[in-house]
Amino acid sequence: MKLVISFCLACLCGLAATVPVQAQSLVGKWQLVKQTSCLDDDDDLNVDDLGMQEVVDDMKSRAGASAQILQLKDNNSGEENTRIISRKKTYNSRSFLYKYDGTALHFLDKKSRTIIESFTVEKLEGDSLIISNSSRACETKVFVRIKP
Image (cartoon, rainbow, N blue to C red):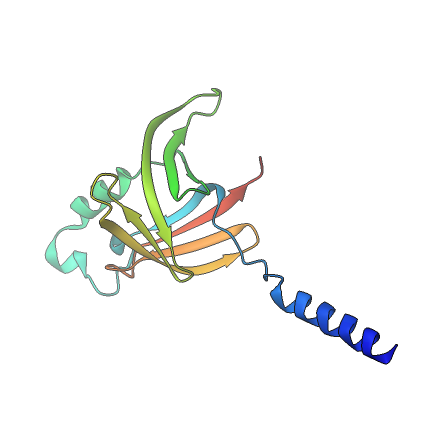
């Protein structure tokens, strides 16, 4: 009887060890809520001395304030689009491939599957995602998950 009990306990412990731990997933719809660029970092670039303040202000004003939506799917494909408030349809839709390795998010070319752009995942918790551009660390994007 003790042998049967110890065998059952061993099976249960082995079963518990094989159950995968649920990791935080990128799959779903994400809305861009904040975006910073290298132009926002005025400490390194003194634009007043260079007389370029008007150019910098013009470049900042061209950034779109519309709701950008990023949808990441299970099959490592995704879609980026802009939602218009009172309409069901979106515009500026663009599909892409991606690869996520736990610390970095890579966007791939659809034909050659080479990396186009890479982002470091700074935070992925619950309903928030913060990524920064790997080649320009001063460029960050903050997303919130949209409930279906």
